Image 1 (cartoon, one colour):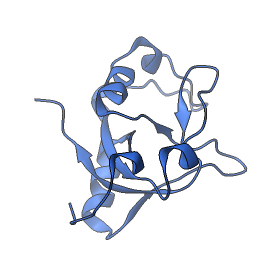
Image 2 (cartoon, one colour):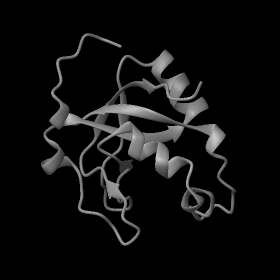
Image 3 (cartoon, one colour):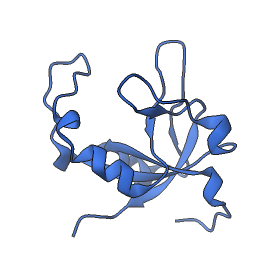
Image 4 (spheres, one colour):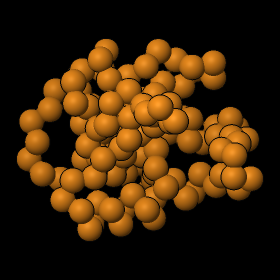
Amino acid sequence: MANVNVSKSNIAYTLGHSRNYDQALLDEPIVTKIGKTEDYEGGWVWSTPEAARDFLVSKEFLTLDWGDGKPRNPDNFSIYVLKLSNTWAEDVSEPDELGNKHLLHDAQILNKYNWRS
């Protein structure tokens, strides 16, 4: 990871498809997680890696329907560290009906958070 000076208030954690995100982090100097757009509510974000992990291994994750009919295998996803553009209060939504928070503005993906042994 580059030497980036960030305070805890502008760090968040997200989930991403490991193969795609890992390749992007190898290939690109800056990788961006997309925030809210007209057609997208923004990527999921959590304030701790433990909270992201808890969702990734939850029964709710397994039953998600992203409209493509594909089952979700948690082994294919990882946790990534985001540098928010502003602060948590400015860049993260209130919880949705499922309790998930979404990224309101694009954020830089700093690195993969390794929690699996």
